[in-house]
Amino acid sequence: MNDSKPLKQSGFGPDLGPFDWADPLRLEDQLTEDERMLRDAANVFAQTTLQPKVIDAYRKEVYLAGYRYEKDRLKRVIPETVVGPEKVLAMAQCPAVFVGNGAVTYRRVLVENLGESAHFTQDLHNTIRAATVARIALSRLESDGCDAADITPVYLRKSDAEINLG
Image: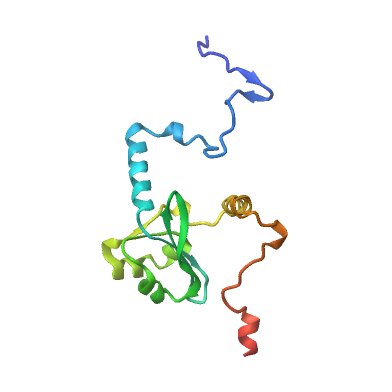
């Protein structure tokens, strides 16, 4: 005999309530109160420190840009550039929360040189996601009032073909 209650049906599956784009996997529901407090404390720390984005650009270089939260918005404080990992050390202001696959690749170098001032995000935050890029683009379109047709990529370094031409 089965004492479980039948699931409320709506369409082809159980009724899961409205979809939450900010938390599509409903991870917030799975956190304990202590985990929420720890997450909130980490967010406060991250919003008060420099956040260099370090993306592995191969050829022993990384894409680097530094951001800081000001009035609940990210403000770029280190311009976008492509540099060797040693330049990241010179540009990083301590303490810093490093994000990106370049932070994973060069973590040992960053820790050896910056010590306890170097902090890192969880690995799941080090991959560029198309949805994140789209959300940032939409936010910029809405706030800057620019036309989507005017958006063009920024190339920070020459291509291999340009470099090989001399």
